[in-house]
Structures are given as C-alpha cells and as structure tokens.
Picture 1 (cartoon, helix red, strand yellow):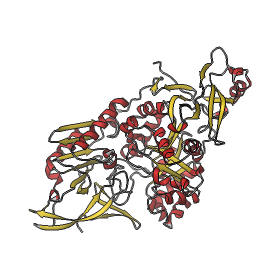
Picture 2: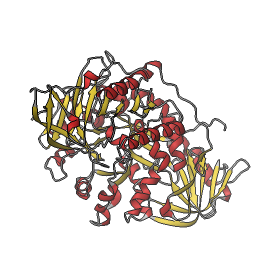
Picture 3: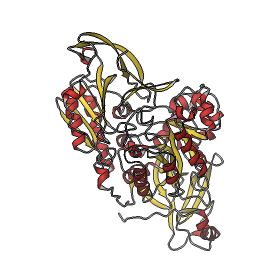
Length: 605
C-alpha cells in the first residue's frame, strides 16, 4: 500500500475551490454516484443521490454530479447502497483499547468510525500534559477527524486519595487550549463533588475551558434525582456519559446537557438508557451513543461505533435516529456541525457506504477526508508510524521487587474473626457494591481464602517509587484454582493492580508486569500469560491484530481460571477508579464514594 497523506483544511481556506467544483469549473477529486443518502439533518433517506468531493471536503450533494467529473476524478458507483456520514465516537479513551492512536485508526476506520472526541486522561495520569501532547501529535497524522479533550482530573479524586505520575490544574488546562482548535474540550470532570462544593482547582479548570471558548464534559454518578445535578450543570458542564438509567438521560436532557449512552466492552448501558426515547418519548437531539472503553479484543470481535448503533437499533430505535446519535448530534454537541457529522456541502468528506439493510450497519467502504481508506473491512491506505520517546517506554518504577509478604493482610487480633469491607464486582457495570463480610484471622493474618468467593486485591504505587501499598479484599472474581493477575492498566492512576488468591503468584505476576515495563500478566499453576503494554504501561507497541490476540489470550486465561465475567479485564481494571461508586482501592487504601462524597475508609469495621 502507498503511504497516504490526509488534509483537513479550515473551510475558509477551501471556499473558492469548493464553489468552483460545485459550479463545474473545477473537476472533483472524487464523486459517489447513485446511492441512497442518509440525510441526518432532515431525518430522511433520499434515493438516487450523488456526492462530489474536492480534496478533503464535500463540494456538492445532489441527483447529478456529471458536471464535476474530469479526467482525474475518482468515480465510485454506490449502486444503490446507503451513503452515510462517517460515525463519530463522542466519548472514548483510546488507551483503553491498548492500542496506539495509529493502530486504533487501523482498527476502527474499516468499521465506519471516521472521527471522535478522545479523552487522554489515562496517559495524562502517567505523563501529564506531555502524554496528551504526544497522543495529539499522533492523532494529527491519522485520517481521523480527531479531537482531543484535556484531562480534567489528574489525579481523579485528589492527591489525598491516590498517587499519580503527574498533576494537571487550571494553568495546564489553559496551556493545552493554545495547541490548536482540535483541542476541543475539558475531559470528563470526575471530581463532581469538588465542582458542586466549590473546589478551587476544579472550578479554575472549568473557567479556563470556558474562557478559551471550549466545552466541558461531565462525569456525575450521584442519582439523577439528586439536587446537586443542577448545581453541577450550573458550572458549565454540558455533556455526561455516566448515564445508566432512563432517568439519568431524561434529567440531563431537561437541564440542557447532552446525555451520552455508553456501550463499551463491559459497560452495557444502552439497553436501559435508550428507553428514555423508546418508552418515555424524549427527543433524541441531545442524546449520543458512545463507547467510553473498548478493548482491542472487542474491537476485533464485535466492532466499534457500528456495534453500538446495532445495539441501539436492536432496542427499537429507528436506524436513521441511531445514526444521528453517532453523527450530527455528536458534532452539534461540540460545535462542529459545520465540519463533521453530516453529508452536506462544505463539510469534511467523511463518508461511509452501507450495504444491505440499513439496520445492519454493514460498512463496505470508508472515506476519510476525501480519501478511500478502507474497503470491505480492510484498510486500503497505509498510515505513517509514530514513535514514542524512550522515557514513555519505561514508566514502571517500583522501589523493590514485590514478594509474597507484600500481600499479607495483618490483623489487629491474633485469632478470631473480623468484619471486613469487601469490594463486590458487578458484571457489565462500572459500579461496585460495598459488602461487610466476617473473615477468620489466623496467626495475626486475615485468612481470605477461608471464605468462598473472596480474593485479595492490592495496589502498588509505580510512578514515584514511594513504596505506597494497600491490600484489601474483593468478591466476584471467580478463581477456582490458585491464580493471580497483575496489571498497570488500573484506572485512573494506573499503579500496579494485583488480584489473586495466592500470595506467591500475586508477587510473580506483579514482577512480570514490572519487568515488562507495563502490561497484564495472568498466572496459574498451568503457566503464565503476558500482554506487554510498554507505552506508559497502557498501550501496546504491536499492530492491532497482534494486540487483539494478546488481549484475547488474557481473557482466555482468566476464563480458564474461573473468572467468567464478560470482558473481565475491562471490569477488573476499574477497581482502582476512586470516583466510581461504591468501594474502590488505591495505593492509599480503600476509597468509598457515596452521596456524602469521597472518603478513605478502613478495611476493618
């Protein structure tokens, strides 16, 4: 394949040539003829339509484009297929796919995703603004209409609750918005209690964003009926993806916010949230479909936004309405409807052809910035490789090698039983349940294995060599044999997270990911499965296909050990995320989030 370059010029710079092309005085670079246009502006399917493209933008939409065809014009006969706007992901963490931006592009372009709004708060928690800048630089070399959001919560819950590799505040946010117009918004403001109760840092970041004329994304996990949701909205937060019920969607839309309905690998929220429209009749113009987090494995096996659309359609949403929620609605939310989200004159030529039944979202051709980049599920354009600096490939700093003794839970009594806080995992949900369980104490140590269904869970600080460590108890993992998993993908501080029922194996797994400078390691008596993630401890240096296979190998190893959670790794990686209800673990201990706020709580009650 020939290396391809992609041009996305501002509309103002393209007006003369677009008008000349539409008039017929300048040949189009590409035309699509004879298709059924999915018009997301009017909500119609228009038969026998054609599209003319000049460079990276659409010059003409109408029945006949023959006056634009010249000797060098690439002509694509749609042959009755649907011509639709490229799909947009309105909230996505690329790092969660375990892929670089380039490999993510290779994975999703054949599936019809031509752009998105990416919150790089994973790499920001490791490398701060430098990490965001690196991913932005890589984005700009891909075909995607890619827009960056500045991480708002680094750390997510505050330095008193966790240790991260960097810190971002109002000054850093203001600086990031000087990098270019494609730095579009403040990423999800997870410290919503801080916003509601006037935290100076959080309000300062929001003010810096608004002064730059950008947008603020939310993350509000208190109940939608809570009186503090309007307080949160008053700060300028106009979009939120933490919707898990129809009520969550309805209340946000009523407040003028965009409600983002999520279908990640392990977060299956669309089925319930979409009923705000299908059962309660809420207007969909402020409703969006997003992925949030999808692994490389699920990209390979299920898809990306095409999969999310199918899920919504399966719940009773009209196909064109579902497409609007992943195109024009998303573009309007970020003030970019002039450039993306529809097939209209002047817009970027981000176009997909769909074959068969529209409800199937069967993408057979993808055009990005006026260039055919994928056909029949295969990339036809070669993308330039991006190189990360050495320091980004060496980000795991443990002061000493973990041993089995690091995972002992010392008890305040020599023998007997102690009521212990336990993190209970919920399949296909981001939230956990706080349980109180009576666990035996033997020789001054908590005997976690004495209670069926329990494992130990630990976090080792890996950014600054502090030696911080906490060990607690988790339920719902399902290990049926001695097993342990360690990972540096541990949202959002991304310290070393270790889960297991055998202290020796927990130590071995932790050392394996440290030696690999990041990744995931699953160990049982049968052997070891390692998925290296050397880029900030989050992303693979391998091509998409290899990364997806290694991700699947981790899933299989978890399943073989008895952990049958759907896309288990994705669920486990959130157990250190201190801003999601109800009980989490960080390097500083157990963190509980409740209607009263965020607080550190003791292991023993």
